[in-house]
Amino acid sequence: MTNQWLRSFVLIAFAGLVLAGCASRGSKAEPAEGVGPYDGQETTRGPSTTDGARFGFDAQGNPFVPGTNEPLARVFYFEFDSSQLQQSDLRALEMHAMILRENPDRAIVVEGHADERGTREYNLALGERRANAIRSFLTAAGVSSRQVESVSYGEERPDDPGTGEAAWARNRRAVLVYR
Image (cartoon, rainbow, N blue to C red; front, side, top):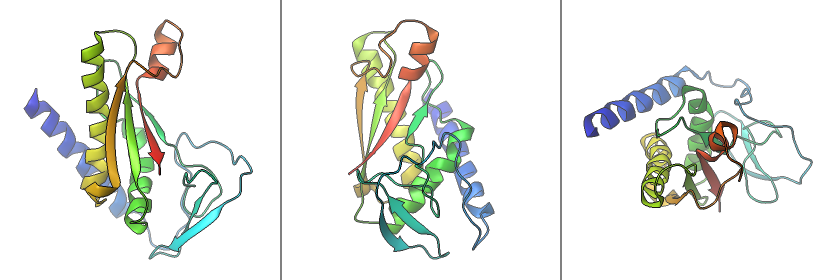
């Protein structure tokens, strides 16, 4: 089990590095998958990056996709009984890593969650593995470990209190909370 997790982590970290290496300098950032429409909240601007993009943050301190006024995805979903990151989430996570590297005064809490199936203890451990998967990705991408905290809520804070696969799928998640 540990070897499988280690191989998965190395593969994910390598994929993140490949994606980071493929970015061309000076190009506009494309919105990440899962990015919603701009909600009209006031923005504050952070420092410039080395490629000229600017980081914007909404009134609650959540980041926009660099160079846009679109909120960056902060909720990442997982398969049943899994803490493996989805390939489709790597681009958004790399953007979070870039924002955190360029803003060392910013920090995040990664909240790990699980659906209601399984024991309370198992779900707390699964939520912790999910939060730690994102924390590991970010630190492997150059974010200071002092900037990333992880916490597990297990099944205690469901996004959807319903029962059934659709509700359970919404509850198998990790959420990035900027502070």
